[in-house]
Image 1 (cartoon, helix red, strand yellow):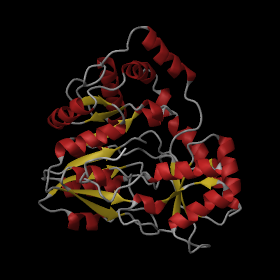
Image 2 (cartoon, helix red, strand yellow):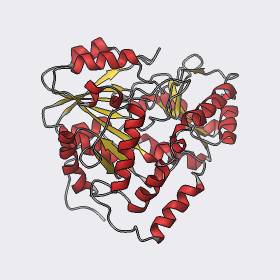
Image 3 (tube, rainbow, N blue to C red):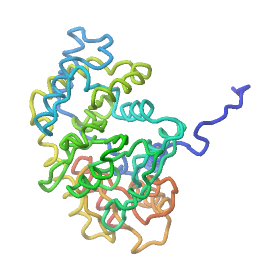
Length: 384
């Protein structure tokens, strides 16, 4: 059917996401998938049974807009135990229909036309488009591709009277970098005595390696007072398709975020919220995640030692970067397409995480896979 209307696009330069494109190509070529940050292994069967039990018990209608009360209280207790900040379960904790909805609700509620929002590239691909949809301007700051560090002097130079928000993401997708004490100190100093809001994407909060601490904004009072923290049950419990996340924020910010949330989704899926409440009662359901994924990181890294790739260190998340510039002059896109077609292995070009899309000589690998997939994926990459 042809439309009689010619719509004026709000995002004229945005097409299908790279994840969909790579997924389609991978299916066409029967490629093994190291591209998507979604586990290919099952979650805890007890969690599935918990959802089924909630459904059978009648938890099948709308939850409260802010989330099931018991879950909000459990999240408040968890944040206090882990990070030392008490969020009021009624006014400062909101359960969302995915972390993505949390990001959209926060940016939409708090960013206005003419504002500027600083974020760091490479970045998760939704940040800049959401900012643009508000009539605001995303300001990218490039991470160093040598050591994945932030140039905080460049951030300082970018801050002006129009700067409304800084988006941070640690552990970082796609690089695997994590914030350290110096990052926290610089961010604190740059935002002190300002109206700048920090939107902290912490969906990989429990996936930090090598004994290091997750530097949540909630750990630092001066930052917590101006931060919206977004996290994800899907990443923590290996159920990315269940689409439940949450926001922690001071009451004044939460009030505005909920105004958007109530008209987007109103509430997240009820039986899943009941099940996650039960899961949070056992802290080991999330505290063991770092060791679990560190083992997978190390399996993939060790299996790639005989390859021609240069691996960059991964301090957290589901991802590591692999540099191919030492043996190929192809663009990121060309190289990834060749891997799919000639070697039946799917990865993501790092250039897809930049607004400019220029080649970087790097690809992103996901190790959120079962061990057999990691070993077979490494075997194929070693043949490149």
